[in-house]
Length: 206
Ligand code: AR6
Image (cartoon, helix red, strand yellow):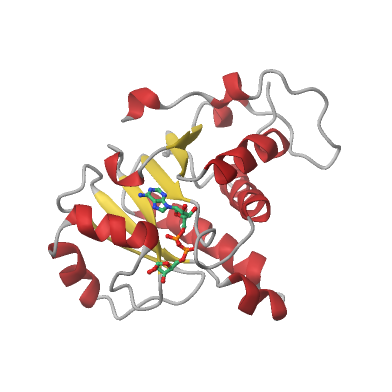
């Protein structure tokens, strides 16, 4: 639950100097960002972001866990959506989940899309489209699974950098003003570690 979340400014308080290319600190951003390690299906938030596939009809990993917890109405709504392109996202209700909505994002398969040099752009698209959908639907809190870092093979470090850069860019654009909580919800220790390592470069301590 949200009581288990912890604030980024505490996480990064021991960080020293950051590289020159990083964005300037902005305390109002850091107050919105959380990194946790938890089962995403337990979160009480306005939307959780699922790591889906092009069919949107369910699968293994976090997708399977979300569909099991949401109950059969979720796949019924998904059947009406006509799938989803890689790098894009679609929103549904949350049904039996504690989260109000599910945003189904389709991340890139790493080894396929890297060959074409499209992996970064496609993963970034998932995060940006999910944030846009949250704003369009008047949502205030959103929790992302670590998209593509499971069976789709995206390395955790690289994935976390793309996720953090895209969220920072979205907030810098001013479009994310209504969002008061953006959560990176990890399941594996390696993914949480990657966030802790990279977060100070995108959300520097104030
Ligand atoms: N809560 C939060 N994160 C989780 C959970 C959970 N309950 N379970 C797993 N993860 P993956 P992908 C993490 O494989 O790589 C599906 O079959 C997991 O540790 O679920 O984007 C879809 O239908 C990893 O960090 O998704 C697609 O076909 C992250 O969720 C395909 O897998 C994503 O791992 C998508 O592959």
